[in-house]
Amino acid sequence: MASIKDVAAKAGVAISTVSKVLNHYPNVSENTRQKVNEAIEELGFVPNVVAAALSSKQAGRIALLIHLNTNTQAIDEISMQYLAGALESAREYALDVVTVFFSMLEGMGVEEVIGYFRSQSINGIIIYGISREDQVLQELVRRQIFRIVLVDVPLINESTSCVWIDQAAAQYAVAEKTMLMDTIPYKKVLYIAGKSNGYVTRERIRGMEKFARDYSLEMIVRNGEFSEKKARELTMEYAEEQDMVVCASDLMAIGAMRALTDMDIFRPVCGFDGLTLMGYVGQQMNTVRQDFARISQEAVTELEILMNGGSGREVVLDYTLVRLKYEDIIR
Image (tube, rainbow, N blue to C red; front, top):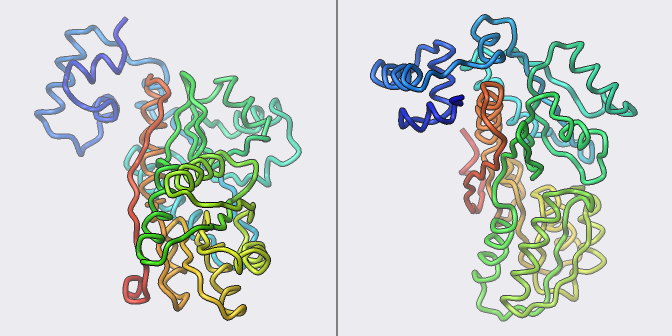
């Protein structure tokens, strides 16, 4: 029996384009629509029940499961960008969206979580981050009851995709750029990692381990838990004996820079994420800019593909290295 992948290959288009034709979206050229329809007819493709329900508007309700950062009083810019990107794509696909916070599921077992999403008539879920210790959500993924897209979590099966950037490569790149901007030979680096139980943390540490090996550096790794305060404390404790400080988030980089200022010493500092807040710090720092809105848009597109018969896969997006300054962020 032909699948949506077969139709896409036959027509020479993306799976998401086939989905748009099946669901009669207006922003598809007549030529593309004709190619897809010809491929459907030639292959004898019959859309699955999920696709049929979507086109009749009796399904297509998705949940965005978000974890808000409570470690800072600053606005959670990342979550806001995720929401904005997801809502924009959801409108394009005519999907109804429910926002759910991790705290709302706290204490629930997997059966209760399944019941909660079913009570909300949810067909697909985008989960923004799962820790390696979160057995309930990992079991939810394993059950394959819902189509799921995971952001920053490399768990993949037939019904589950992952969307993220190459975390290890990005962490290596920003650390290398920061070091090579100086002519002074570096020997020691303090790496302030994120949460100890995070998939992202594991990948970024892997990138830093390669960086330290390639440049014969001694490296101290400490978990800052994505907390500005914790990063400040770690910098005060360890930075004086180090040549540079690499942080796994911009908030932690800000904490590290403030600590160095109070200590009246200079050490190069770099961050990760590309938050607007970095432009207000006063001193420019290298960082990895992730386009969180685009990541979320791609997650919705991937979920639409899964709900129309696609198989789970890893989607790796690009990133850029930037050195934010005030003039870059003001409008």
